[in-house]
Image 1 (tube, rainbow, N blue to C red):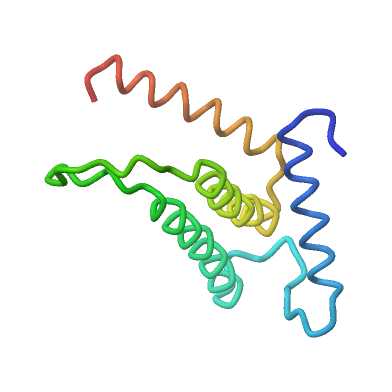
Image 2 (tube, rainbow, N blue to C red; image 1 turned 120 degrees about the horizontal axis):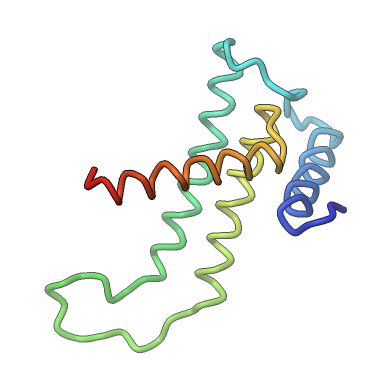
Length: 125
């Protein structure tokens, strides 16, 4: 496993992807994908949409978001909500790996983008 938590998450997803690819009749492509190719873009889009679907499953656990609702739903299944978000992140981690990005690539871009959005906030963007 990796030497930090983010690297470990990437490694766990990679191991799962390899197990799927090596299973009978998986149809999973070799990676990294060539994102200039139509079929590889279609595959990436399908994986991205799976992640979005999982996020929709997560928000189905939110019952008190309607501003016009007069009553509150007291129960909230925190574990189920978190599990759906984890499912979504698994697909999003897969996108990085399919495109040939590493945990370091993700981290570096995250830090770069964080600086950009803070500058925008400070400048009234």
